[in-house]
Image (cartoon, rainbow, N blue to C red):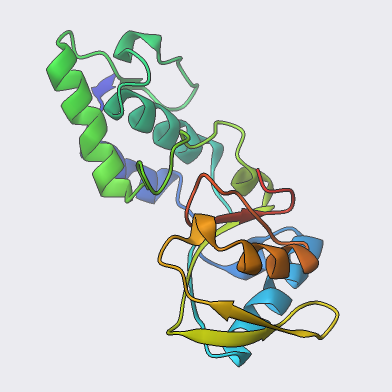
Length: 190
């Protein structure tokens, strides 16, 4: 039986389409690259908090449409159906539909503009185990070793999308930054 978009979908997703925060769930090559990059960051004094690794396609679906509807990037009636996820996006009232989608965005903790300017993807690298969402913080300037073992000075920037020095270090490990989504790193920057 169809259920309107809203808070109830958070509990459903946590039971039926849970995200993983476990680096071990990542694809083998990317997993090792992430471990090496994370180790270099932590050795330099950074704190790395892993938010998401492997993601269910059903969870990606809920993320995608709730974000797009809540951010006025589409009409609720534009949302496509997905087998196994009987969500009603269009409540018959634009404001109620948007409010239900916003409850989901808030409940899932999705990044919205300016931190993320793109809707979560229906075909995310997370589904393949080739992406990780992580927060990387430190104070001042630290020296992080790149894959070649060279120390690179990196000054903290509250906007991770703008920290190109950090992006270059990550890329040396095969962990590439998506610069339109604050926590997202992947095999190819998508």
